[in-house]
Image (cartoon, rainbow, N blue to C red; front, side, top):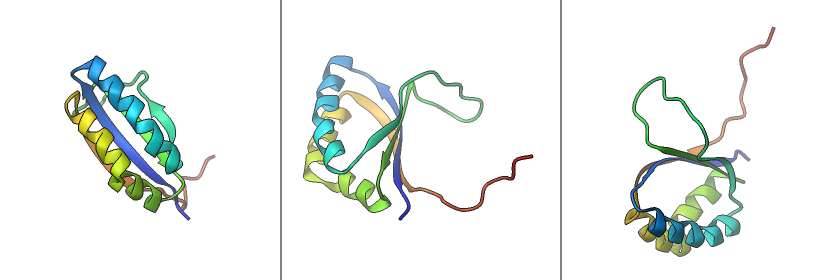
Length: 103
């Protein structure tokens, strides 16, 4: 089974209110087996547009990633995030196919 990922780009507009979102998302993330792969950190943006914060969450499956998003618990947290930030989010299925050969 392929893993699922949330890839988010975020501009936090109200850091104090955003802390409420972070506290509220912990429950659904734990329930659906999410693990932070990227949570802020340094970055460069050599192409396209960016936001000030990047987050990648890994879930045990694509379905778990979708189920977390659709859950009542996360939807409640989402309302807190929407008043404290602007973001782009994509939910994507992982890949387990061939890779570039290494010499």
